[in-house]
Image 1 (cartoon, rainbow, N blue to C red):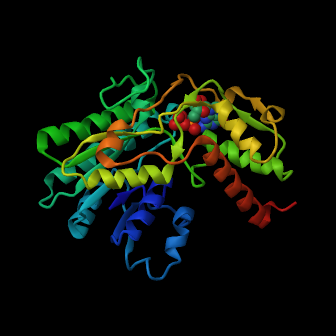
Image 2: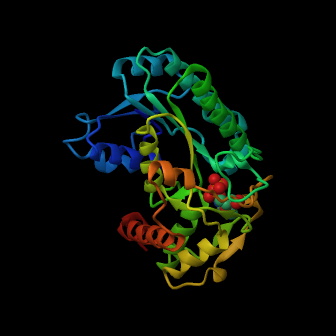
Amino acid sequence: MLTGITGQDGSYLAEQLLSRDYEVHGLVRRTSTTQRVRLDKLFHDSDVYNKRLFLHYADLDDTTTIRRILLKTEPDELYHLAGQSHVGASFEIPETTCQFTGMGTLKLLEIVRDLAKQPRFLHISSSEIFGRPQTAPQNEETAMRPVTPYGVAKTFATNMVRLYRDSFGLFACNAICYNHESERRGESFVTRKITKAAAAISLGRQKKLKLGSLDGKRDWGYAPDYTDAMWRMLQQPGPDDYILATGFAHSIRDFLDAAFKAVNLDWQDYVEQDPKYMRPSEVTQLVGDASKAKEKLGWTATTNLHELAKRMVRSDREQQQNASYLSP
Ligand code: GDP
């Protein structure tokens, strides 16, 4: 069972689980559109949709419905990936962020606690819990000092997962994920915004790219690696928390460089700064130490920044070339 199955990570994880012969269930929000682009390939596979992949309607705060679905489906593993995941947006909608990212996790834990057959539980936590850490790289023991509403909500959820593991004996794990990107990354995250723009500019369809602060450094990995690690976490003999990261910090300028180089352009000719995208508070440098994941899960991140940027730009160029509504 996955929450957030329509998101970047949910869609990769669903594919990986299906390829490992799982029956996959996903909780989805009821909306007026049924467009779920990231799951398109699975929907159109008649051997998969409604045979080995099932979707159920439930909002994260609809505990009655979620309980009913869990009682009916009796999952062995529950991956909790849903929640408001945009740090910048969390300053605009802090209550919603805490309601879904923070309380949504607690509500799920409460439901699981009461189940006769308890699934193994994985919560996707975030490097944002470390805020402005005093040590680098950060590991599972680093103090949490969140500086954004999203970071505060994730800190609450991460600690609740630990508490339910320690106090109620749940098999509950935190995957403390550093930024992980892909062709399926949401379009308002900085990497995807950059690769979409590099593609569009190279095709003559966009002139400028407006960004906020370029000072931040991030540890950017490739999303399918991270979902593979999540699965590995739930196959261990016992529950635990793991940092998932590449161990390399790159600046936004580095990513711009890599993305625009992929289409033989110089980003400095196109990027403008716009105060609209500046945040009231910012984590400046996050880099993770994933040695525990390497040792215990046999996991390492496989894709470096240049490959990642190139892959994303290539995919965006293909998408834009294929999209007829964008044709000049
Ligand atoms: P985050 O690490 O989860 O906040 O991931 P984002 O991709 O949203 O942001 C990464 C960094 O890029 C942060 O330091 C942002 O302030 C910075 N940034 C600069 N311009 C932009 C922009 O236009 N959009 C976003 N999302 N981030 C930007």
